[in-house]
Length: 80
Image (cartoon, rainbow, N blue to C red):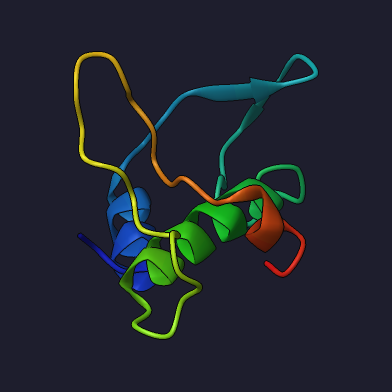
């Protein structure tokens, strides 16, 4: 699995066409609406790699019935 920094580097290579309120976003990494989403994705990748992460915060195995990025037990959600 990649780290948050590796995710960011891959994102820099993409050239997605994204519009917000009718205007095209040309700088997806610097746009204030997208920055929290990018930061959350980076944190998710880093959390999955962190050996000190709370128990149960590892991504589940993929299966046709279940498609999830990270499962977090309800008791842990408030600590993250």
